[in-house]
Length: 261
Image (cartoon, rainbow, N blue to C red; front, side, top):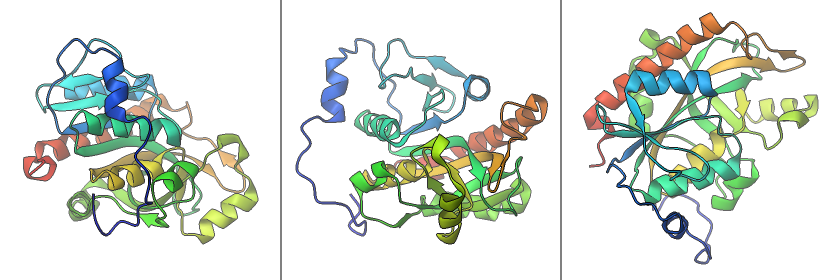
């Protein structure tokens, strides 16, 4: 664990991820991979990701509530599906860590609260603001950043990718995003919100896992809801998702970046 992280001092948990995995009586062998991609999108985007990376299903429900896929070409695990909410994110990351994963790549989405950030934008989460309950269970950090090597990699390709580097914040309640909360989140420096970005970075940081999150701005949730990309414009969204997936593929091909050494 990193010494410079302001982690909470906790007693040994009653239940650990390793113990939980053992109770599932996993019979088949799990590929030994230190890299995993967690998809925070629905079936359409998940299927596109799996197909592009050549993922095949691993038999059995290994990860809590989700099936794992494995790409032999890139030697990585894929957790597909609409995975939302801090608690389930923490469970999945803990269990991936127990399986030997040390590098996490998030493929997701977010709702803009910044008028200068429009739906359809590709973004890299450069920092998160820690206000959600799950993040607070792991650390007293006010802010958390991704792995600096990944961030530098994307910073050098900023113009090529046409990606924005944004600050994110996780809300615990999708249908309780009020104008007052939006105003407060803006004052804290957040550009976008979703249901997983903060614990995704915090939990991986506390476990000493290297992580980066790449996503698509699907809507604007400021004074009113502008849902341009929310379950609409599939052709356009598919093209943008393909671009994001291609950047993920290029990242995992950089062995010096994703290596556990």
